[in-house]
Image (cartoon, rainbow, N blue to C red; front, side):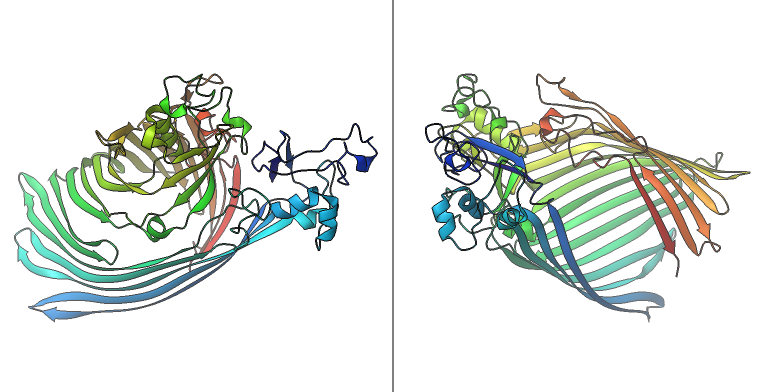
Length: 596
């Protein structure tokens, strides 16, 4: 891990190394004359950055225990001359995780080991620390810290469903499905108590170790739901309609946290001839906030983002939120490579989000070309009171451009201008609206050497727009993200797609796949152009059937040509969006499966 300590510099400030500390190479303990000896004071501008290989690699070890019990029964009953199927289901699941984050640094012990020899000698177990040369095992053991945490989730679930036909129409039976479901979710998280304790020696904003701090999380909610679905055949085998079907559904949801809601869904499928299907759906959605969104304790983290106040107030006279930031300020000089220290937390005041979704499309399967099919669907989704968080870059930009209450989430060091803490929490945005087109072209055919399958999937994102409330009043704040990648970990290319070519023989098969991610904008910068390029990843898999398909063995490689993610200035210092691009490089795998 990277250690970054100092007096008035560094991620963790307030350390001191006296001139008589045993391993200060510039002090009296190492034979330097008193007149020339140097001490590193807690209030002087010194900084040491060092990869702590002596302490060991940062390892995360998880011991996960999952318990799941379920039982279900089903049957049928004759009602009114028809058969109705029913089923009852119940389950309990618990997931417990014990986590160890090994080889962190204990700041309090490091402070003592670097500090006054007299105080260290008087402190039980204290070992003087050498940051200027390889450490002894005793030194490394004294400052090494292993974080131990525990969290648990539980789910209780019970459901009852009935399906059958109500009556017959000329085009076929009217089918009905009804059901009821109960769920209860519980969550508990116990962070390491020492990690979250206040430091005995450093300033109040610093913790005792390099591990991220957070407060405990505990919460639960339960849900009652009832639904009904109806499928109505209108026409079948008519001159103007091969078929026309209507589907209707309704759901009642009652959450213990946010109340109840009825949502509806309607769909239609029209096949004028056997080769073509026109389809459309309108549906309402309702999502209550999760346990984490409601109850998550405040968690310390490091954000990626570009501070718009770099250069200080003098270099940004048009940004009122940069007032008071010293000239020459650059975030890269603070914290770990300019990462932004921050806190994420839940919000018990969240309301449920609701959605309206519309989709319409066509599916074409020409009888004259067996195995060929094309589907094209347009979708539009509008989420009201959307539960989401503004990105750190959005928060900093709003603060810089507008100042005032927009800076309540960003606190700075008055002397250096460095961001001390950025607050990010879930909130109900006014809305998220997105629309686009999904298309799939498929062609399967047989040859003398096996079956060939070719598939092309393409997605076009027309718009992805968030509308957030304005804390200063007035018009809401609108952010269109489609085609943009100028915010960390928030890349929304207009185009994404995948193409694959597969071959299946008697005892073997192979698939070659290409994954495409289109270009996006980047932050305007002096290092590269303000654009993140497109990329194509290539994957290959070969499989072998064993014992008449009773088992299968496969070998594969993802990112065959070992392509690195395209450089993104917005995602500095990692330099790419970890949620969008392949970070592993070339990846080989093998699998073996058995049918029982």
